Image (cartoon, rainbow, N blue to C red; front, top):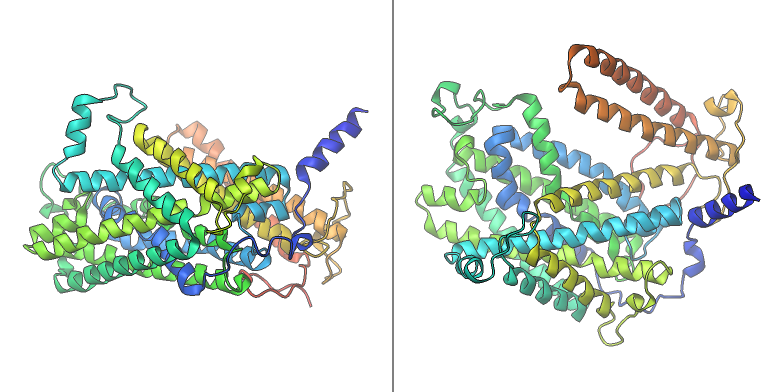
Length: 530
């Protein structure tokens, strides 16, 4: 009795979405108006914002020094792994919902529900954070009129909230929410315009930066660093390779946003080809922009003297170039506007997807007949994000958003692996076998090139083992430095054992046959046995 009930609950939680059954049912709900240029602009605008105008200077000053260039390249490499997995899934399932719909197809309903809420939280907090940054940026340029007035008359005295209600950030978000709800074509046109202005500003920074570049700023001697300044040991790697890697972890935040492209599957022309191409182009554009700006930033001015809040305007002011200072300031505003559009754009589409599947209130899936967008969902998203930006202190919430993003990326990568080793095609239902198979199956001694129920079961066990072991490995590495010698010895043993298990599992997984599928785009991987 209990076993039957448990099995029934498990089957309901792990039931998968069968995309093939829905082809043609909802094809007319959205307007398919977006092309590869629109999507690349959306992804670039969503991603190329705070990373250029704030993050590069912050990381260079106290974390990586001139090696911030390598930090961005390393972060780009890691992001590209997730990017190609998103691109492959987009070619498999061109539906609105991004990682939510991907996990629903590959893993099951419960994981999809968790990831869906995870994405909603991530994008909502991200929208609020960007609006807050833009409000503070403009308020600072105008002499802090809002801050002065609101702190005097409506100050908030709670540690976990902001110092005052940020009305400007609420208005920014609601204006963008209305643009997004107005229609995808209109919001895309506005996004394209702002992204173009942003890219022109970045190009101006790069060209002028190389003109004012001084190569000696990459090789500053330790003795030349002013007393009382935390400049590390000088040189290109003043904080060592550890600082460069730590900088990469922070720079990863600058690549968050390309996944907004994946939420447009039902509004894109030829999405199976357009979305993967747009994701790849976005990652390429952003990587070149970040690396170039980080280079000129540290070449124009010593890394230890960078302004952590607005490095570029301060540098141009110190160089006696007021025109470039105000030009870059204007570009930063446009960049934050495009980032705001990119953060808010996916939220109503994720709500629409979850509501259509019966996991949220049905009214959220209603499409406005005139605008052909989820109008109600867009307005509700704007209000929620606006309230967050108005009253909350977002520092801890931004950290949570980064964690949520990494979790979403991880789930997508795991889903791609699961689908690579599935017994049946993507759209059919299957059930996992509880049997433990022989060693010949686990090692694929027969060199079979055809997937079956046994190899599918083995692959999922291996993927689970790999995921758990990887978590243990990472936790041990992170905590190794902060313990005494006796504990370090135990952690060293765990790290070594985990590394061996990861290597063995990887080799075993690569021995198994993969499903032979013809897709417009596939993440690079070993070819299946022939």
